Length: 450
Ligand code: GLU
Image (cartoon, rainbow, N blue to C red; front, side, top):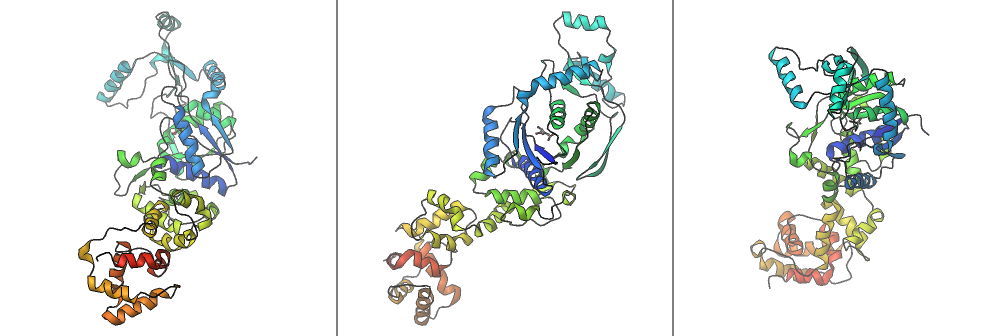
């Protein structure tokens, strides 16, 4: 068992999205860099919103990223433990019952604001007499429970943000337990972090103010306080908030769009840091020299185009052997498959795009716009085509001959050939591609306008 322990703690109330992926990946890379364990903790105390299908999709996403947590914990199986701690906190006077309705609280908030005061809960329920409480109970009204904050400053040295100080008199005593007895996130999180011996908590900066409350709870429960690190959130490339469309881009969407796991890991580990995003092939290269202090306080700007650009670099270095079965699933197999992959990989953004090029060498027909090619040119190209056997000099011998007959050179010579053979303006190296097409198919393509 490692001394350092981290946890990634998603709620199974939806699919993991790109923002969650960043939190996961930062935890993963950092855990590796300090030789720590990474635990997957499923925060499923909200019974109404948690769903089994989301739990399954989280597991699938994590497997896809090839991240293997050292343990998987589900909060829904730990209610007994939380209840025990709840009773202790009530007994010690750290939790107090409240009965105000939402409407009453809203009204109080408005009154405070209109008299220029911060809208902080006035602890009125703390002053209820035993009889008043009995009255509520007699009327079947169940309390929810607030944590009585120690109204002082809480400070910690954030692994990402540096010195932090939160004034605990600047917000209301947080509700930790709902009237139906279920636990909100704050308390179970602390109980589990203590139970699991978590040493480092890395999460989004939307949790900074929770941290003050949680530090108080860690102290009350007699525990060491983990190291906290809060990373900035993601925004769109132009700085605007993540739109519904991008913000909700799930890992599943990202996977379906052909992004490789290593692309996402490289991207999320370095986005919003002072390091350039690189196309490392292995996690070890990323872990080397990893430092959380390089993460900027400003929001990380997400761009799908950048992700695709990185994917392009990543797939150029994936060997055929690694991809073998995935290519076979796309129908790319047989003797030519390896040669095909080697020539096509530098021209595609995603592995799936290879299929389009494979179709070109396996199907007779391609779509060409008649106006794009000159009939006489094709005739000359046909007549100049070398006989078999072909090898890697065939292309230069052929194009040299056409050049002599037409006087064409460079792009003027190669583009019409490329269009005739592939129907595209750009694409894989033709010297190899014609070997994959074979003489018969090349001839067929050249006679396309006949
Ligand atoms: N379930 C919480 C969330 O998804 C976990 C926060 C934490 O890491 O403490 O925001």
